Structures are given as C-alpha cells and as structure tokens.
Image (cartoon, rainbow, N blue to C red; front, side, top):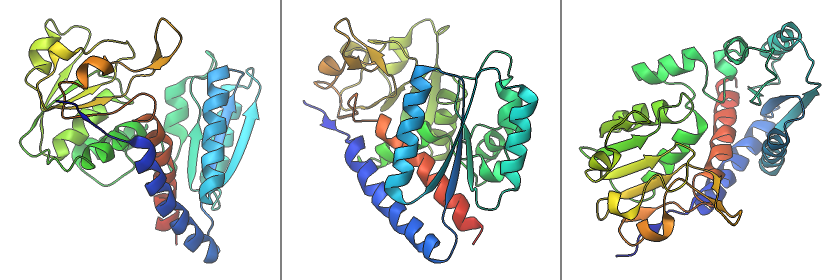
Length: 282
C-alpha cells in the first residue's frame, strides 16, 4: 500500500481563492477586512512568520496593519495598544506574534484581545467556546488539520483518533475538534508509557510534538490517516515533520507531507477567521 498524499498546498489555494472572493465582496460594501499584526523584538523566525502572514493578506485582499516594536516595549504599552485596536472598527482580527520578550506575560496579552477579534483562537474565552461546543474562532493549526482530514472523504464518526501532544495551541484543541466530529479520542504525551500501543489502534493519528521520527511505520495501523504537524530539520538540514514519512507512506491510507501539508493551512485558517470576523460586522 502507498498512502494517498493529503495536499495542503492545493487545499490552501482553493480556500484562499474563496477568501479573496469574500474579501472583495466586503470591500465593495465599504467594509474591507482588516488584520492587525503586532511584532515585538527581533526574533528571526517571528519575522519570517509575520512576513508570510502579511503577504497572504495582500494576496487575498485583506488589509494588514503591521506594527513593529523594539524588545524593550513595556507590557503596559503593549496592552494599551491592543485595547486601542479592540476599539478600531476597521480592524477585525488582532494577532500578537509569539514569543514575546520575557518581561511581557503572554497570557495577559492574549486575554487583552477582544474575543470578537481573537482570530488566533488562543484566548481562554475562545478555548471555552470550543470546549462547550459554542461557535467561535478555532485555533488555526488544528482547524486546518480538520479541513485536511475532510479531503480524504473519511467520516470520523466512530473512528479512533490518537493525538500525540497536549499543547494549548495544537494538541488539546485538536482533541476537542475530533471529539466534536464524533471520533473517540486518545491524547498521548511525554508521560505516556507505551505510545505504540495506542497508535497501532488508531484510524487517525495527529503528531504534534516537535520531535522527528516520533511516529514510525511499525506504530501505524494499515490504512490509517496520518497528519504530521511537526516542523523539524533532519541531519542534512532538510525540513521534516514528526513522522517517518518514507516508512509510513507504505502503511498508511492517507498522509500529509512536510512541507506542503499542515503548514500552508495554518495561515489560511487565520485568513478564514479574519474574514468571518469581518462578515459578522456587516
């Protein structure tokens, strides 16, 4: 068996075309969607991520407002700026790029963003909406994973899904989204004694730990769907995920590549959340 590739790049392009159409319709009504992106400090990776987000906004007709600050920006000043953006009717989404300098509490910053503009879906209120099944903004990476799973045509109802990782940004919300889709969900993590015991039973495995070769071919049920959220480098410096792609693609039914799988979907879902926020204000 050779697994079918789940093409995140293609799905992302399709979704962004729809987002661009919706953005153009809103703009024609005098309500161009607006996303504010705040970048504090000089973290190189953060600058790359922000540049990609700003470009994606431009490509889809979303107005982006990029605010860059030195690393010595005070927490109070950042919170005040967020409050001003909360009140700005031309801004429909607010994103503060992480990590922040150590003197700024990220939880305070996330909590300061209006739930109506929390397009990252990271706030406690957004997490509560997800937990209780209320409508709201879903964290971009796990929501993107769900869209990728949808493309396989496999119903999650009654399926056993294993999530490897329990972070607030991916693992936990991923498990909740799978539960909402009527899957039976097991969450594994660093304290799980026999990871393979769980993954061999899984119809769906989502690997999100940030460590390459966490999942190998002997740990996968034949025909399973494997979603690789990881972003690592191999011994040759080549981009790779959390799973042994070469081995697993001979066992799994569907698998996401790295790059070209989950990655493109994360920013796409950020755009989708921003469009949704703008549409709610029309």
